[in-house]
Image 1: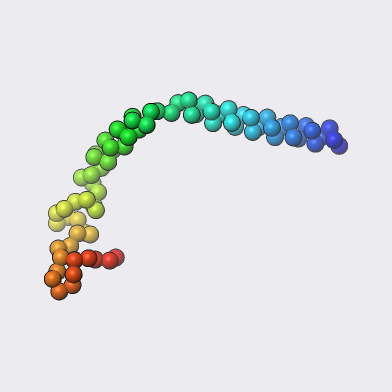
Image 2: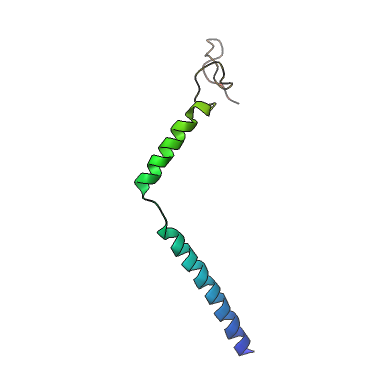
Length: 76
């Protein structure tokens, strides 16, 4: 019985070791922060024309001109 427990614990440790090795390998393929920031800025600039909350024209359903009688804020 003790032998089975030892084998079970060994299998668990080997599985955990394998998982940690895979995690370590994936970290090695990480990119520098500066490159990640540059990519993120490029992506947001590309998506800017499609973002309904950033458009400042008639097509933006969330942008409403301020009304003096109601105030300037709209809560949805």
